[in-house]
Amino acid sequence: MTRIMASNSKSIAQAAEVLKLGGLVGMPTETVYGLAANACDGKAVAKIFEAKGRPSFNPLIVHVNDVDDVLALAEMNAFEHALAQKFWPGPLTMILKRRNDCPLSELVSAGLPTVAVRIPSHKTARQLIAASGVPIAAPSANKSGSLSPTAPAHVAQSLGDAVDFILADGVCSVGLESTVIDCSGNVPVILRPGGITAEDVSEALGMTIGYDFGDHGNDVKSPGQLLKHYAPNIPVRLNAVDLEEGEALLSFGSIKFMGIKGAGAASDLPDDSLRHLSKEGDLYEAAANLFSMLRALDSPKNKAIAVMNIPETGIGVAINDRLRRAARG
Ligand code: AMP
Ligand code: MG
Image 1: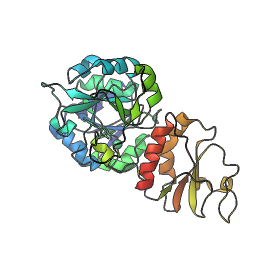
Image 2: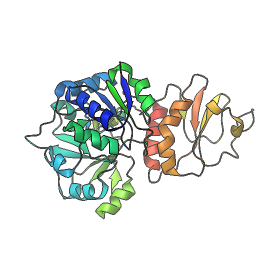
Image 3: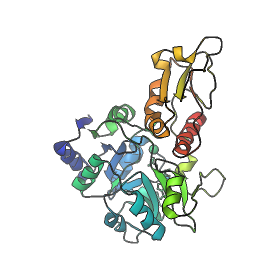
Image 4: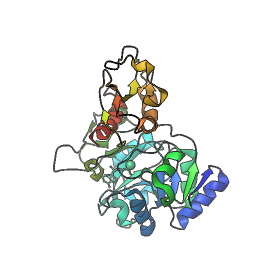
């Protein structure tokens, strides 16, 4: 049976015990809920792959509390130190070169010479890392390929008894997975858009930083780019300007002028077929709402989820990345 407990000093200590004994913990972070295990314990890490049904070629992100902890695992160059200074703790993951004496399980890196590392800002996550005393591997706490969890109930729904303990601490403030950046080449490149935007990173480094989504064929830098992801059970249709009958609407901005073909106005849709990512057109609000609202509309009662256009700027790039994958699924 999974234990679900509200986050406090006692439950954090219990969750840390579970980690030390090789178990799995649902851990709140500012991005999404993570499925946490001791990253130095190969058997515990293997349980993550099993619980998620995650392909073993797809490496995990390791969470620690400060740069010294990072340096015990991996090497950092000047770009990486600059980004750490600016964005850690926070929703930025860096792909770093593993140290020769790196104590992490090989499975964490899926056999690659690199490791993905992040210092989270979420208070409970930080307390859990400190209490466990080990680096924590934590991908999103959902079945591979489905929507990421932004609330404790989502973790229980998606993983059932495969997770031993869930630390419940409300909804995630960012709501999208971390930005993944690779600084190992001459020019840093973002492999996964997320809470920290290309504009943020460009400003911090004083140079224009772009994206590499691995959609150019052979040279895929991040194994996760190969996978379809974030898919609800019903179809997702993007850039909707009107609705087919039976479709649910995920709106962005005003829906005053949006109609349902042959059946009236979108604003008259029943509650279980309508969610507003952000009525004011605020991209950060939309990001925080994205996964929970896709989940809420993902019901057999709806034929499909029609999503209004989201501007491809700032965190909108990350929202559209998740939506395109959802639509492909
Ligand atoms: P998740 O754990 O589901 O948030 O996904 C982590 C993402 O980071 C996936 O897309 C992984 O493929 C990617 N990733 C993790 N470790 C590495 C690594 N060492 N090199 C390249 N990409 C990585
Ligand atoms: Mg994930």
